[in-house]
Length: 363
Ligand SMILES: [Zn+2]
Image (cartoon, rainbow, N blue to C red; front, side):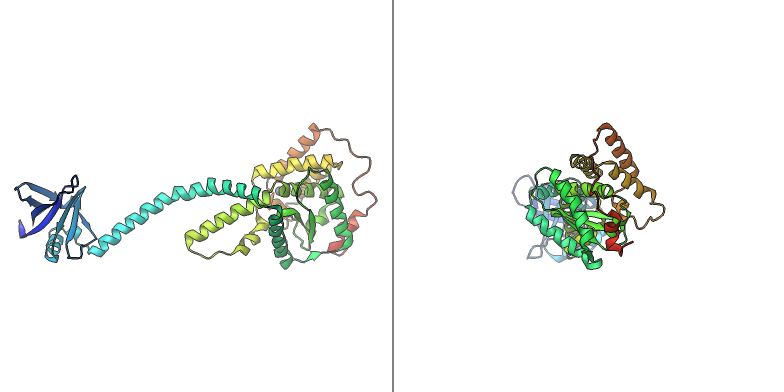
C-alpha cells in the first residue's frame, strides 16, 4: 500500500446507506475499509472516474453500481499516479464519455434515419401529397414553370399552343372528373423532354414537339404526363425530395433553399410503379378519347431509336428509363385491348408539321 489513507464515503448501490470508509491505494486496486473492518478491493481496471466533481472537491469513483466519494485533490493525484490508465485529466475523461455518448447516439440514429428515409418520409409524403388542396398544387406547379421559363423562354405561338391545347382538351374530356385545369407550356429548348408539374401544368420542350410526327404521337406523351398530375405523382415526389432535403439540411446544419428543389424537378424520376401506372392509365385514356394508341408506342420507339444519335438531348429518356421495356409493354397491351380507331384521325385538317415546328422557327 502506498499513500496516506483517505476518508470517504461508500455506497453499495443497493441501498441509499452511506458508509464512512477509509480508502488506500494498492499496486493494482483501491482498498476500501468500512467502519466494521469489512474490506472491499476495487481493481483499477474496473474503476470509472466520474467527471463530475462535487463543489467541495470530492471525487466520485464508480465500479458497477457501487460508488466511492473521496475528498481532496491529493487523492486524485495519488490515484492517477497509481493507475496510469486513469491519468487523463478529468475533463478529458468527461469528453471521452461524451464522445462515447455521441457515438452511441449516431449509431442509434442510423437506423432511425434509414427508417425515416425508406419508410416514414415516403409514407408521410404520399399522405401529405394526397391531402394538400389542388389550389396549393397549382401554385407549386406555377413556381416550377417560372423556374423553367427563367432559363428557356415560353413559346406563345398561337398555332402551336392551340394544337397542343386542343389535344389536352380532347384527353381531358375523356378523363374521370378531377379538380385540375390542365395548361400546356411550350418551352423553347432543344432538349427532347416533357414533364408534368403539380396542379395541371404540362411542360413540353420544343425538342420533343419537333420529333412528334403526328398529333397521335404527342397525345401519347401528353396522356402519360396528365396521369402524373391526376395521380399526384409529381406532388408526392416533390414532398419526398423536400423532406429528404430538409432532413439532410437539418443533419448537416446547413441552411435550406427551396429553389434547389424546384431546380432538381427537371431530373425528377418517378418510381417504376408510377411510370407503369402513367403508361397504363395514359393508354386507357387515349383509347377512351378515341385516339389511336399506336402513336404512343410509336413515339417511344422512335425516341429509343434516336437514343444513339442524340444521347445527351434525350432528357425524356433519362427521366423515363427502360423505354424498350415500355414499348414492349404498350405494344402487348394494345394487342390485348382491341381498339376501334375513330373514323377521323386526331386534329384532322390541321397542318401538324407546321404547328409542331412553329416554336422552332417553322420548317
Ligand atoms: Zn413519366
